[in-house]
Length: 238
Image (cartoon, rainbow, N blue to C red; front, side, top):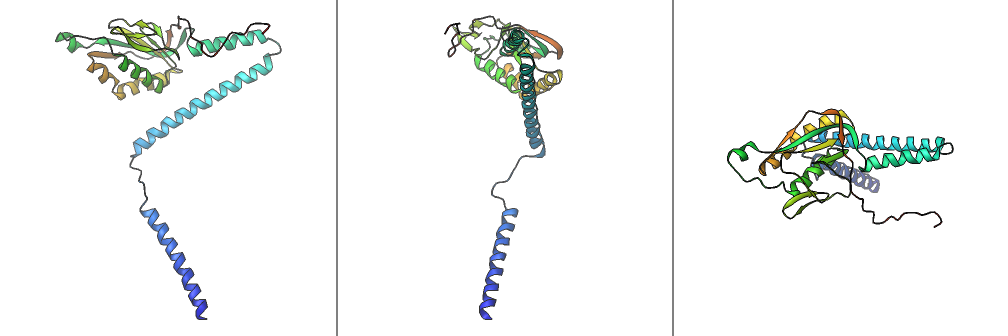
């Protein structure tokens, strides 16, 4: 009898200890999430946007695969030409027309009024700007008439900031940014204004003027030879 009571008491002790540990872990978590509700909503919105973009790309790939299946036997040459055209536009070799916005880089009014020396826009600022535009879902970017592609470089050459090895003009000059929709363009403009990029331009004695979004904006195609390192041309008979 005493042995049974002892076992029962031990079981109750173990259960009580486990409940106490669980209660303590709920009341005092090791890591607390200190983000407020707006930060969490912002992160959820960003993730939802990425998810939507991924679904769009999956649908496009599925449509292309279905098109290959239905048309490859009847018109293979036309389908290949269409695919090549889409790839050239996607890479940036052909002009692109779509919703977008024009930004104008001007010397700041204060720098002109006080006679400050206006140095060329630094490549570091321009690189950061481009990275931010890509993060804001830019589909195509043109800086002073020079189209950016995957291999484009922004560097300082002999004291001048260059894009694709070509120097950008003295301010004012335009930056064109195209997106996939007018809604994305409007959201991008709001993100630019909230990001502090305009302040970074102002520090270098420049102003960033943002025009109204437009439904059709044409960007030039990349007009220089594209370096292909790991691909070779296939010749018939190889």
